[in-house]
Image: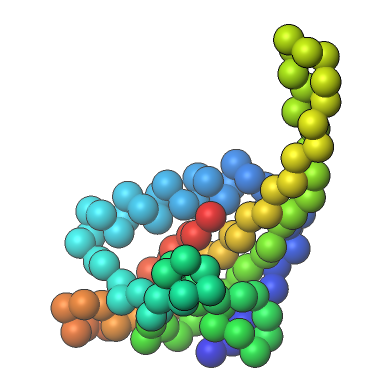
Amino acid sequence: METRLAHSHTLSRRRLLQAGAATGAAVIAGGLVPTPVPANAAFGGLHVYSVGPSAENSTITDFRGIVGAAIVDGTGVAHDRLTGKNEKLLFDSDMRFMQGTFRGTDGANHEGTFAFV
């Protein structure tokens, strides 16, 4: 499996959300439900593992293709209008896309593009 790490600035949030919505609609319309990667207890049972060249970047089992992944984190400020106080907030998001071939729950091979935000 080939893995490529994407920088967060190479794909706009709008384009990522549009691709995710289109992909979701295509999956639902086509009835394709990929087999997820086994649950990871470290991520609360989600089918997600860390991002990296030697990690399982795909969230689909039996997947062959390209995976782009980005961990986007940082800080923000919330302003309380009633008290006038500011609060520093942290955020951490995991975004991935996968494009390739996978074996579906029907046992057949399928091609598709998927987004995970």
